[in-house]
Image 1: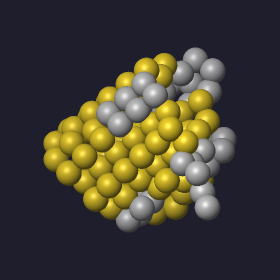
Image 2 (image 1 turned 90 degrees about the vertical axis):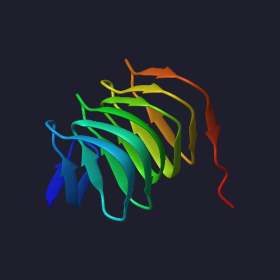
Image 3 (image 1 turned 135 degrees about the vertical axis):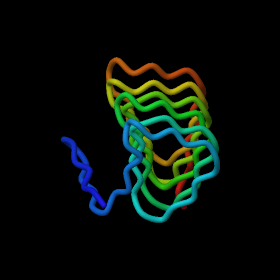
Image 4 (image 1 turned 45 degrees about the horizontal axis):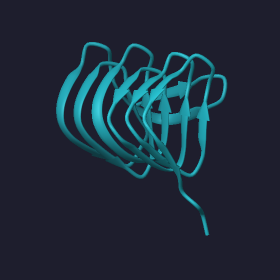
Length: 117
């Protein structure tokens, strides 16, 4: 297990798919996961998904939090928030409670905000 840290976030016990990893299939997890390599399939989680700079993901995602620094092609549902950093590229639709998009991001899709009761 590793630690993920950048200027805004810090997570402990992060499972990492390193830059040499390529994975196809369905992923379900409960602790934070960081993808640095290539992934294709579906992702479901009640935790944090981090797609690192240089990573390439083709997946529909359903998670609590998405931190995007790499490339994502697919639709995202993140119940809590989506944070896209300057190196992030998203080609797909977003449904989330909070959305943060940095300058320089490429985003092609639509966004629907979830209202919390």
